[in-house]
Image (cartoon, rainbow, N blue to C red; front, side, top):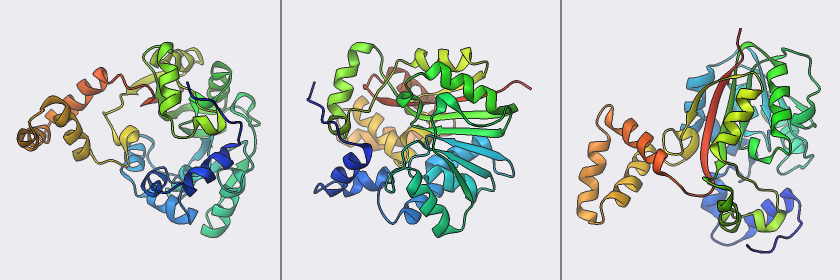
Length: 283
C-alpha cells in the first residue's frame, strides 16, 4: 500500500485539480469551478434525476448529511425543499464555507450546520428527507450516526445513502486505497462490505427498503450514461469488438437492460464500487 501524506481534504482536492489531464475527472466529480455551475449541472444530471424519482420534490424539510461543497444541498433547494446542510469541514473550497457562498450567489436558502453525524444538533423528527451522498464510509461510528439519523427523521420519512464505497472482503481494502486518486494525499477514505452498511441501517430502527447495486442506477454510475454502462458490460462479455454493438442493442430492449445491470452488479467485485441504500422510518 502506498505511503499516505497527511494533508487536509481541501489540500488534496486542490492538488488534484492542478494536475495536468484531470479536468474530466474533476468535472465528473463536481469539483470544478465556478461552483454554482457545477451545482446546476448536478441538479440536471442523470444521478439527481434518479434521486428525485425516490424522494420526490418539496415542500418538506431535508437534511443533506456530509454536504461537502453543497451540490446536493443546491439540488434539494432547487426542488423546493427547506434545506439544512450538515458539513463539519469549514473549507471555502470543499466544505461549509463553499456552501454558504453557493447559497449567497444563487439566492437559494441553505442553512449550514458545522457538526458531525454522530451528534446531530436537531430535535427529534425534524426532517422529511435525509440524503447522504458518499458519506457513510467516512463516518467513524456509523451505528451511532444511523441512530441519530433515525431520531431526527420524521415517521414515514426517507433516508437515502448514495454512492457508498463497497468491498467484498476487508482484504480488498489495500487495493481500494492504492487505486483511489486522493487517499494517498489525505488518508481519509474508507470502504466496507455491503453487510456492514445494511446492518447499521437496520439496527438504527430504519426499514431498509432497497440496496441499489453498482450498475443498477445512475445514482451509482452517473454521470456515465446507461448506454455507456451497456457498452462496458458488452465489452466484458464479448472480446470481438464487431459483436459488441448488437449486444448493447439487445440490452436496450424493455426489461432486458435492467435485468442485465442488476445481474452485472451482483458479479461486480471491484474494490470501492458504489452501492446506494433506500430506507424509511416507520410511521
